[in-house]
Length: 235
Image 1 (cartoon, rainbow, N blue to C red):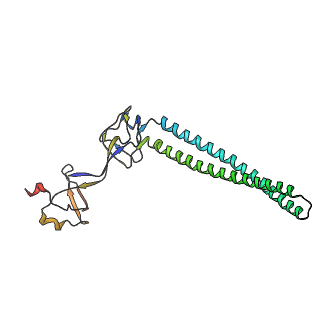
Image 2: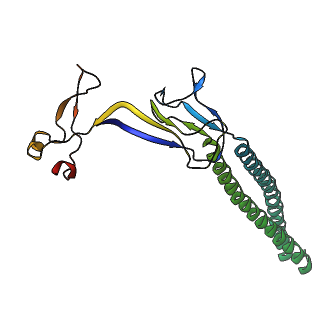
Image 3: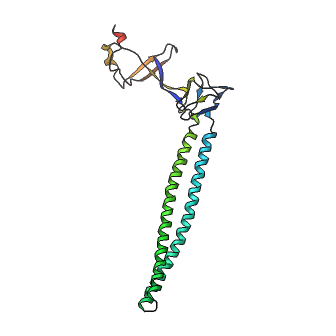
C-alpha cells in the first residue's frame, strides 16, 4: 500500500458559523485540489470573538488609567510625607531648644504620621492596580486566542482528501473541516517472508515500482519493520 507520509484532519478550535471557504476556480475546495502552506481554508464569523477582545481591551485600559491616577496620588503623598518629616525634624529641634511646646510637637508628629500612612495606603493602592492590570492583560491575551482560532489554515502544502463543511455550517469546537494529505513524501508498506527480513534492515535503501506509474522507479530508506507477522499471511 502507498499512502502519504502525513495525513491530518484539520478541525476548528472554536465554535461558530462558517462564513467563507477557500475557493479554487470559483468553487470551494474539493478532494484532489492542492493548497499551499498557510492558505486560509475556512473562516468562522468573528463578530462575537472580536467583541470579547474589545471588552478585554477596555478593561485593561481602565485598569491602566486607574493605576496612572493612583501613581499620581503616590507622588503627592510622597511630597507631603517628605515635607511633614522635615517639619517634624525642625519641630523636634525647636522643642529641644524649648522654643516649642509639647502640644505643638505632638501635633507636628501626628501630621507626619498621617502623611506617612497616606503614602503607604497610596502605594498599596498602586500594587492593587498592578494586580488588576495583570489580570486584565491575561484576560485580553486569553480573548485573542479564540479570535485567532476563527481562521483555519493549511499547516503544510498538500492535497485535499475530504471537505466536511460548507459555507453557513454551524460548527462546534473540534469539528473536522478538512482532511489534508502531504504528498511530498510517500510511505510504502509491503510484506516479505520472514526469511527475507535480513535483506531489509532499517536505514537501508530500496527501490520501488508503482503499478499506477509504469516505467517509474523510486527509492527510499526503510524506516521500520513490524514487530510481529501479519496473521493473514500465516494461514
